Image (cartoon, rainbow, N blue to C red):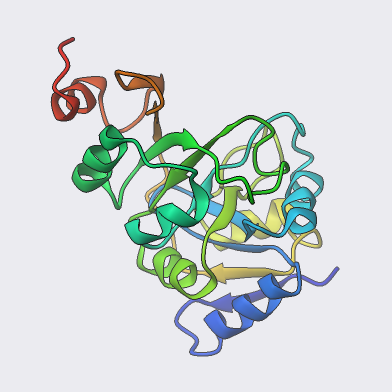
Length: 208
């Protein structure tokens, strides 16, 4: 497979990315942490191809990225009140909220009844997501290898395995997002990240 690389500033870049996604292809693009690689969230075969491209274990669920809070209803069966509070405070940003999965989301996204959802704080990512709709996205690296912060690093690992890389310059890098389970009475931090537990609990009204 020939992997195209287009500047995210190229006026043809986003239309080309949408064309590839609608044909079931994979696109890598910058986010507010690292570069991600994704497919349309409701295209099960395309989501499955993410696992193959990354040599990723199939039992690991893939988060869904959306462009706006209004898209939550498309990917979740219901939105818990605490999730709305946390989204209002921390989105767009490095916070993944785990909520009940929409029944139409393919099993390739998540084989369990929940799904992790996030709005990234990056103009290229949000522009693509607003154009394409919800996408299943994970870091654009081979499984177990360093997460890339440049388009060149993506190409070094996934060149020949994905259809397109949108080059949006260097990303901030750093660790992955904080993950919070919003399905219980109280929010549970499943993975520590840039947003500390104390701030999560402050929004929810809970104490440390």
